[in-house]
Image (tube, rainbow, N blue to C red; front, top):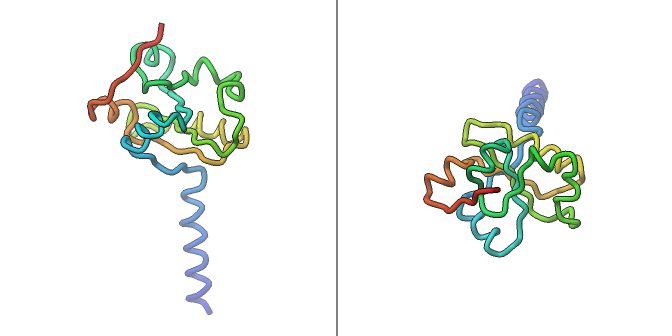
Length: 128
């Protein structure tokens, strides 16, 4: 019985360590979702960086966060992807958590970030 309880407690602790995390999406899968027009991408790099370069079609979280609900699709099951600088950056969570609070259920994280997107040779856009 002690072993069973210890196993249960370890599972509970391990599960809670991942609470608030969002599943990763690969560059290839994001690129396909963009091409298929089946994703809303949120850039969390800040307006200056966003103006310099961002994933095509991404919205600038810094500019949109006050009215994020207006920038996201009506379908709460639609794919929403947030990204920031790269694998060690966790700033994306601000946008992912905001979307989650608005009721979105299919939120993913491009952990490669803008640095991985650029390193993979993918095109970026500039903002005015």
